[in-house]
Image (cartoon, rainbow, N blue to C red; front, side, top):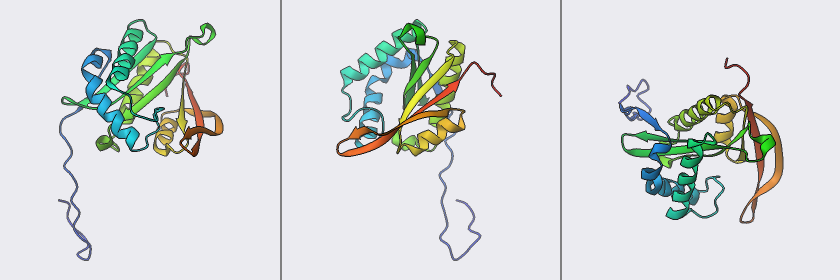
Length: 194
C-alpha cells in the first residue's frame, strides 16, 4: 500500500508488480497456443477490438492461421511471436511478406493482440519490438500495417516505435452500421536504428 500524503483522500492500493518476466516465444509455440489464443481473440472481439474479425474465429481457423504462419516463418516469409508469463498466453502478433514479386522485400504487420487483463502492461510494445527485430533479421525493407481509426492506443504505440502514417481511407471499415477510418503506417527498416 502506498502512503497517503493527503488524509482527506482515500488510501490507494497499487498491485504489486509481478516478479515473473514476460517471455517471448516464436513459431514453435504455435501448436500449444491455439486454444488459449482462440479464447483471447473471442474476448477481444466481443469487447469490440479492431482485429479484422466481426465474429470470433473458431478453433480450426486459429489452428490453420498459426500453422500457416509457422510454415511461412520457416521459409522466411513471416514472423510469429507469442508473449507468455509463465504458461499464460498474454498476446501474439505476426507479420507476413507480401506475395507479389515486386513487393517481396517488404512485409505487413497483420495482427497484434493482447489479452484484455494484460492491457497497459507493455506487452504490445514488447511484441512489436520483437517483430521489428525479426523483420530486420529477415532483411525486410519496409514493414507496413493498417489500423482502425478508433484504435487510438495502437496508433500511439506504432508512432512511438517509428511508424509513420502514409495514408488514410475515411469511413472504410464497416462494423455493422458504424464506419471507421482505416490508417496506413509504415517503417523503413533500411535506415540505421538510432
